[in-house]
Image 1: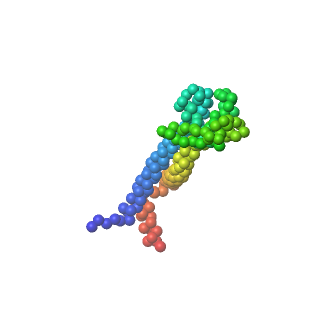
Image 2: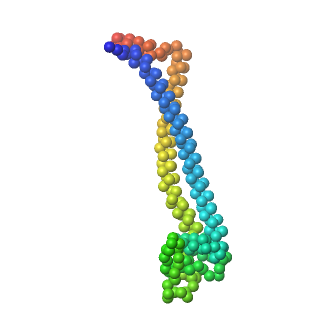
Image 3: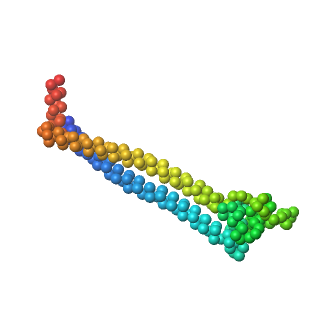
Length: 217
């Protein structure tokens, strides 16, 4: 039957400690790589949202002028203004560049809406056929803020989740670095004592000193 002596244990413990430290070192390096990648993902998400906001603003500005001549742009603007209860890009003043009057979709109280074949259609009430949409009864909010708020809300859960994971991994990285620092400090002190004081710190010598002290007491 195989017996494990105290000497074997004394010789194995330092090796096990070194293995554990090496595992922590590898874990710290791996965490740092993952942490750097996730920081890059957060930066990419924020830059993507900024680009999407800029693209949405450019799209609204470029299509508002050709709304009357383009059927697709016309329906897009009608849908955005009716469903989002907004008017123009920043405000209803943007329509002054296009028409002298505001679109009826800027005044939702003057309209009833219905969806036919996936396209938003507008049908005025019989009693309001001759009513014109004016600044007094138009929606004050612009559609740019509506789109930017929607994009921000869509990406907010992803950003918060990634930041929480980053915080947890940062704590793990700090703990792993502290463990590595403690090990390095211990090794430095041990080597200095061995060099200047000629103290044998081998596992066998430590075990023999332990037995001598035990017999002494």
